Image 1 (cartoon, rainbow, N blue to C red):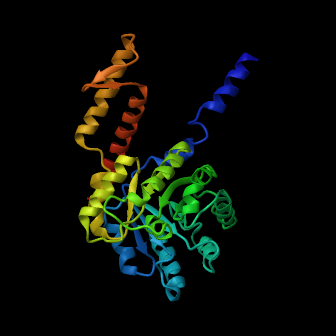
Image 2: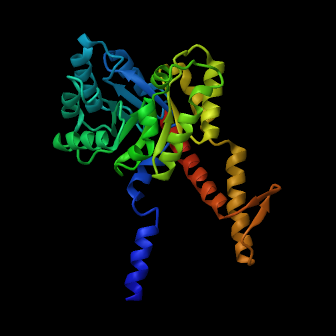
Image 3: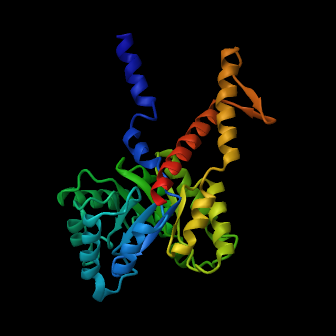
Length: 315
């Protein structure tokens, strides 16, 4: 009886258990997620050569109405052809309430993409509807990503993040959000800091990856670099982007530096030695180190190794 009670309590409160599969998908390099318009065959081909961690082959709003069907055909053919190496290949479909959304899902559910990105998700009900449609199209094996792009979506971020363990990533649409907030784009990003924080909290509570939105002014690299480093320091996993020239800035900002890797190894070693000596904490580089620091260090080292392996594919 006691044994049964122990495992019941363990399974209920072991937070890693429900998200084990999700976390495997979550912990992968997504420093740079490049939107690639499905209407442009040259861009679809060029994306195979760029150093973006993820490519989002786009069927959504940026595609003109007259090019929607051709874009779908182009993306299906591109994914089936392959050649994207270790890059994560994501397909963004049209809104579920559009005339293209359902057919998009049917077309891309089984072509070999790594995930399907659903735009304009504002509730758990929207997530469940997307999954139901994807499953009906034969994509019950597919992880999904969801876009948060409205004030209502931000307020419902916890509900959205907890809706399904098949959600591997939440992608912010900050440009849409700023418009709906009637706010202004500023270098400091003051209008959306609260929204970013709320979504980060929801994502971390349920083991989801979370990606920053685009910077539309792709020639202002000063602001773009600042946005990358601000997002990194807030806890975001990477940034979505619209131009290849932005990739290097994303990758640099979100790549653990050599000093950080060395410090992570030192933290793990120092606390292990302290524990063996009967101490629960230790001071490393004038900073108190506890067990949660070790977990963060282990994650950083694993991510660093994954980035190094991915970048070998870019060479």
